[in-house]
Image 1 (cartoon, one colour):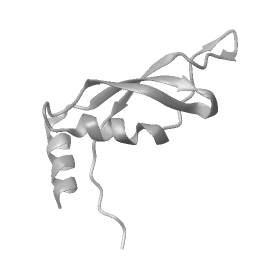
Image 2 (image 1 turned 90 degrees about the horizontal axis):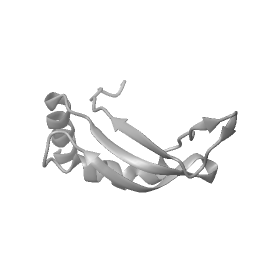
Image 3 (image 1 turned 180 degrees about the vertical axis):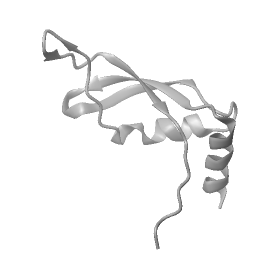
Length: 85
């Protein structure tokens, strides 16, 4: 299938996608921006951005207090595994 083929190309490139997002209450992210994608031009970065709404991320802490509104980088590495039967 096309999705599996795209993931396989991304995995073989050895280059992850990297996004930056602002942390918000509930450990979610918003305002994500694509920093890089692998392989370049593969549109995998676009797919990562589309999925980012469901990522749960802990923000930075200062003196033990979570800093919601801080920015984080999220790196996505690609692997393919066969589902157990």
